Image (cartoon, rainbow, N blue to C red):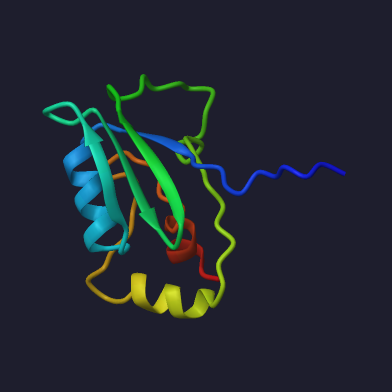
Length: 115
């Protein structure tokens, strides 16, 4: 058995609007921005509950007719007390949808499909 272990894996998502993505994750989802790189920013890291997500500025993707519209990037979260998080994040006036900012949002499926 190995004594070393992986404690965490941080996904890297692409965004076409880094300031809007950071504002959304901070204001709607409760993440803190740990840092940005360059001015204007081209890379950022956000964190919540000791987990990090990295964002990189990218050009809009070229449409691929062989892919489904929702087949971009996914992240699956294993959440303690998901009902409370759902109630907080998916309350009225806190709409969650990835398409408006073209960034991957792990909680989008929770809000669209339920728990």
